[in-house]
Length: 162
Image 1 (cartoon, rainbow, N blue to C red):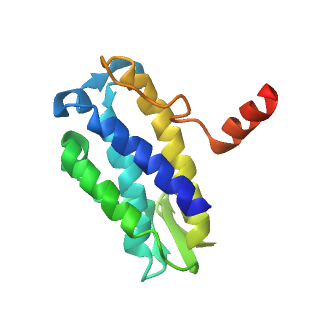
Image 2: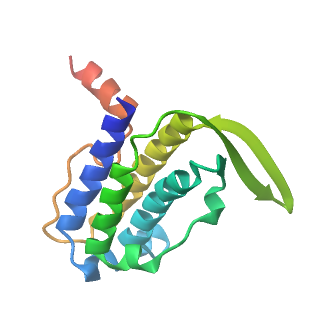
């Protein structure tokens, strides 16, 4: 179910990218402190990539992302990256150590692959909500009403309707 939800969110992102020119994708949005849809997309994808690249070593540090500008400026390249992320998501669960340096001190805490996938899903949805704000400045872009909405919120809304 987790992988299905991740794939759904990434498919929604692909659907958005299919509707945007590189110019719209890279246009800054004042309501988002001048960030772009592309920058938020890059951030989403590089968090997933970081997790996948750290799987074998078992040491995960999200600060060690590549920050590839092509992902944030070229929709076709971003869509290729989405496909690569989706392909890599079929791994077994295992212990992973989450590492972060705070004020010069290295912290390492135990996590696991599935827990980090769940974190990345929630992180993706959060950034999709921000992307939705930037999409308001684009013409002729259609998004699913639940784009950027947490699965629990969708379930709650559906429960309230009944």
